[in-house]
Image (cartoon, rainbow, N blue to C red; front, side, top):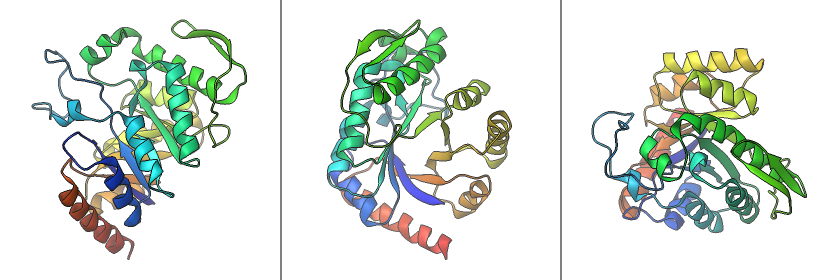
Length: 276
């Protein structure tokens, strides 16, 4: 099992260049970052973790700019969106941005996507919350077409474009790994439908075991499993490793450079001890 780092890269925390270098220098496998375009000041959607919404949710840098900056100063780590809110993004632009990162990184991009939880945020992007699942499905399919076909076309209810030339194509063939985030029966069906992996949040082992069993039963085989926001608790790592997770991305607080690097040193030491 591999260990990466997951975090919200913000405008008052460690910069992407220092973060990318720090993660790779300490032997971690990946940088996995969250996305929110903005947070409406007036909203009804409750914070899924309970309580007040932390300000990191509206301080996040653009994920593709962040990963491109990290790509430029690293050569080994995976660069993962965890997750990109694809229901808020134009799929043609998203296909180009993601293929560009895969190209400049030499094939290290991993596309984590999801529908998100903040209904006011996605409404501001013109997406009806009632259609977000269908919109996500079509945008995933359209991006796959743009990544692989030349010319590419897609005709759906929410995404519709005729034969078009779109470059660059991803380095990874047929396309970068896709992981779908979420925690519902609909998420399970979506992972299976798109032959994708599942990127989970940190949840109790019993709950994760239920979802993993659903995925395996529905797909008829093991589904790739990675996690965002993993706590730095070796007993938890062991419990979820037994479920088949191939990568845990330890949660790094959004703090300034020196404190971030100090924490990365601590995390690396704990990982080394865990591996014996």
